[in-house]
Image (cartoon, rainbow, N blue to C red; front, side):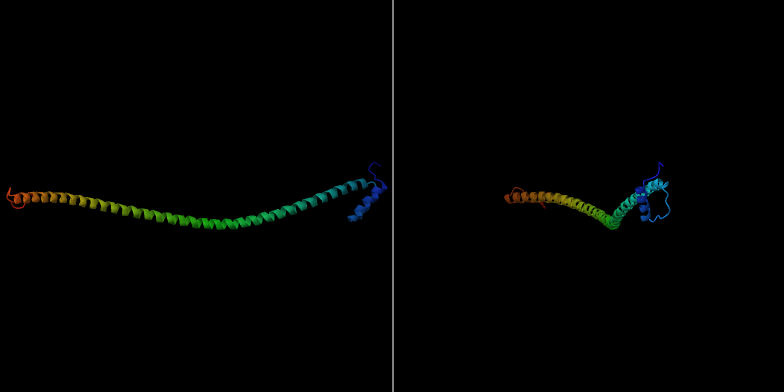
Length: 159
């Protein structure tokens, strides 16, 4: 009887099976097979328990990650709204600056035209002033000659 177990092992096996509520009949010939199956079953139960604990830990980690993701989604939504608002404000400010630049350039051209007109008027005034100075100088010379008696004053000088 190669596969048979000793009386002590058989009794221990029987007690373990009873503890697990396996009350069916057990022959000594099949006790070795049942012992091996029981060891495999207990090993599988331990592995299952370890996997359940690991799954529980993974589930807790998943809950933490999901709550973090939910917070990030909320923040993302708020940040997108803020970004869109700032982008709109930036576009409005850019358009306003463009309009202001166009207005300033228009005013600058008007001022430059005014300066050109004023320069032309100033140039004409300077020419007229020089001409009047020349006339004044000629009249002064004629008056001085007349006072000295050099030449008689004729109708107002050389204009």
